Image 1: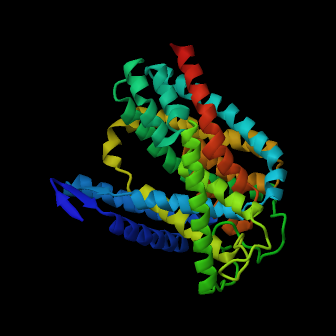
Image 2 (image 1 turned 135 degrees about the vertical axis):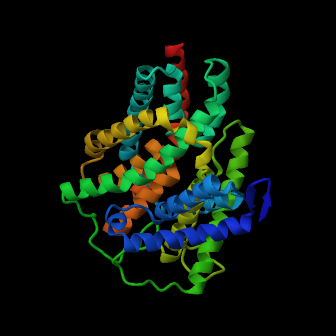
Amino acid sequence: MELLDGILKIDHFLTVTLGIVVLFIGKRLNQVVPAFREFSIPEPVTGGLLMCALFYALHVFGGISVEFTLGARDILLVYFFTTIGINASFRDLLSGGKPLLILLFATVMFMLLQNLTGVGVASTIGLEPAVGILGGTVSLIGGHGTSIAWAPIFSDKYGIAGAAEIGIACATFGLVLASLMGGPVAKFLIQRHNLKPETTDTAETLDVGIKEDSAPVDIHYMDFLDAVLSLHICIIIGVLMDEGLETVGVQLPLFVSCLFGGILMSNLRPKSLPRITGTAWPSRTPAIALIADVSLGAFLAMSLMSMQLWELAGLAGPLMLILGAQVLLAIAFIIFVVFPLMGKNYEAAVISAGFGGFSMGATPTAMANMSAVTKRYGACHQAFIIVPLVGAFFIDIANVVIIKALLGWIA
């Protein structure tokens, strides 16, 4: 930790440590504020937003800006998505083929509407239409990385001053809104339609964490060690796949390759293959669910606590109008399009929570939303397969096509 010229720089170790503290703060907040738990607001969201607000106050009143080293955070994301791959079965993937295509179709429809809404609001308040696309799928579904990648084009070709700052601001505020939206929408759908999980087994292991009202789970240290070893094997496979794909010109986020690595190992590994651990492959075990919960929670906690709101405050006014319209669009689209198309059942409600996460934020936000819902109401394995495949893979391809087409239309 180093304080230089009013900037407090936090290293990897302290960043992870503070992320764990934020998780505990979020847990306590959700315990003392029943509304957070009732509406399935993820614990890292409540803790992370509180810590972010404290750092903002430190900047405003103390003149100190806090910067975090976030390399360890990104490793946690790889761990989390590898656990999702380990939990996947080909049976779920095959049965999820049709729902995946339906969700992808609905998402592409929404992406078009999201951009048109952004263009419409931007034009109404006197901004360039291109700003509306920046406040659409570039920053919301695309996230910070897509915003930064497209910023030079918006700045040089379309004359949008501060395109990178606008995109980053929208992506940041969108992440917060997505974190707060998915749980309440799912609660509304579940209660309105009196939905229940397909399985009535209250002891069924969740993909992430444990159910709120379940009995404490005993995890032997060998089970945990076996889960870590299995994750590392799958990550090695994922890294090799990622390097192989890069050689042929295909670039995917590393966590997607590791997700596929987990799927391949869980489904193609011979069941008779002896293991040094002497245990069965740890698919859908409490140890894997624990690692998934901790890695996702710490990732999201660090992501939210590290937001530098003071750099975005000056852009908040006009962008809030665009983002407000986008939130209303997302909620209406989830209730009247996504939920009916996905079958109007419990799984559809969980997927709706996930859709709320990646439609305004990012795939990890979608997973956190679904995790909070399943912890309260029960397991839903298929949702944890099809949502990341759509949110972290297919829509990135569709987004490029849609952005280019709309930019050509408004030119």
